[in-house]
Length: 360
Image (cartoon, rainbow, N blue to C red; front, side, top):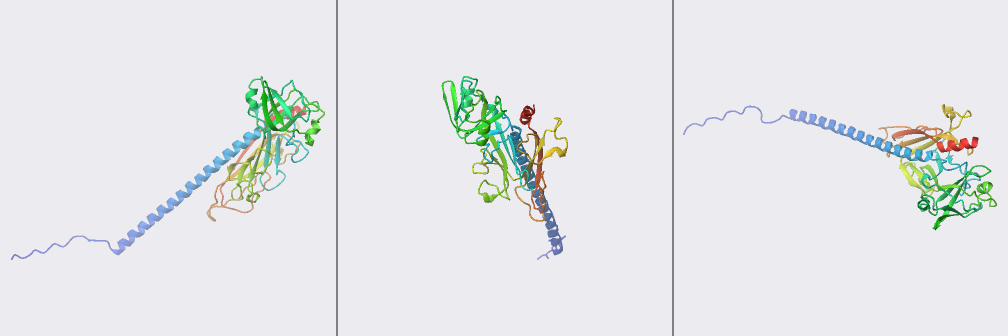
């Protein structure tokens, strides 16, 4: 039997040593940890950009709605608006622009804007004369598009008419609509009499007739305010979730107010009055006023809106302090919210027109 040939010894090694395995695990751990940290950073950056985008969108939408409405202040009105809303809080007429909370050094402001709907303007019929305590006004439906316009009026809304023929001075009267009807070529808007309102009776007593022709339209009364109180039982807002609200019936806050934009923390207004020389107003900071008296007609309004992120960062990760705006002093303690401010100035061309008429 031939002798067996011994096998050759294998060259190289057949595995890893414990040291090599430990080094490999350590390197893998470092790489995975680095990738995880990069993922966390990228995730936080994405969340931050998402919140920034959301705040920008909230600011743009809030600014668009508020400034577009404020710009309409006084359209189709003359002096203060008397009648159904003028006597709500006092015996004074309702100005086309009213500011609230202006005298306080804390908390958001609110603003009420009054104007006519420019698309629904009609002149009252020259064939009818109504006393000051009237319960209806008529319109000639043979006039261009009056028939279509009167169909847009409804009970519960407001009828706002301007009187430019009153010998006692320009005036605007607001009624609440009780019904609308039409027969043949005449349209009738029934209203609740204003005879119980002191401010209205002062300028239009029951013994005096309304002018034969007034310019009328649907009255728009819009109030913007911030709901940040969860305890009032009205609206979705709270201290952790402030909401910009819109009221359309001058009874704010109440259950039918419309939430517009979430996470609007502050709303502040400043007012520019015409200077004594009649030049371009508000060329210096000193000409801007935080308060608006009922006898003053501003030429410009500065709108300041402060938005914040929908959630707060964890303690120690990010800190900020709510800044002061106009006369609302800033916060003294920090929190974890991101914030952005948008400031814009609105020219009140309608208010300027009537201000010039009153001064002439």
